[in-house]
Image (tube, rainbow, N blue to C red):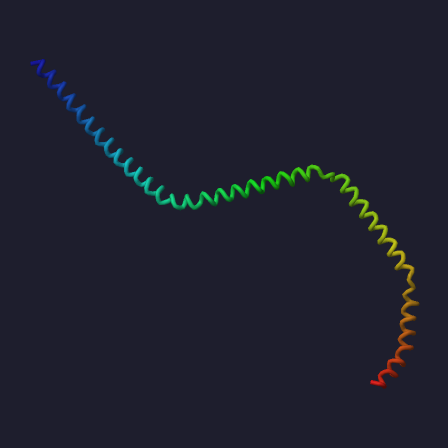
Length: 141
């Protein structure tokens, strides 16, 4: 009788384990179905994006080509700037400013030597001389 009891207990344990395995199998089956559905959805999305990707790739290639050209130009410009002697350029600009300042000072000195009162008087005298001539020439019009 005890053997029957032990066998019955073993059978119950086996049945319990089998039920757990069935639950686990069902859960795995559901998860596999979800995985398959996700994969199918991903494939559909990628196939929908494929035409866009094929149109974008040539543009990306063109942009990369332009970037290489720009980078080459940038390298040339950088090397040219590195070879420029900015110190002598600044000295030359300083000398140019000094020369300009001296020329401006000379011009101002010459303007200061002009007698504007005498110049105004000469203009008035010229005006008084020309006025009768202008009236006389207006008579012939």
